[in-house]
Length: 120
Image (cartoon, rainbow, N blue to C red; front, side, top):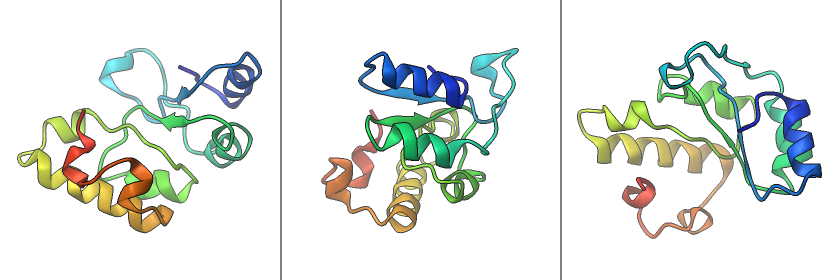
């Protein structure tokens, strides 16, 4: 986990295989840790995410996903919002579809034959 652009850069320099970047927003799973916001996402993606997988995480929900993607995120982790959705499969399809549309991805780019398999 990295909690700032400086930490993300340091993780890359130290040879990490991938990073989590966040929490972007306050979240009950990281009590006491404020959200780092969206301001550094584009720089993180350009400097770190272009070299190793970097996953934006923390308080991301379907309702703020467009904001996160507009800030430049290429990979996101959404947990609570999907797992508590009345229809997990439909919610997952919605998220994957929006990411594909926003990022110009194809299902094959995600390593998925079917968006429903995005739930691990």
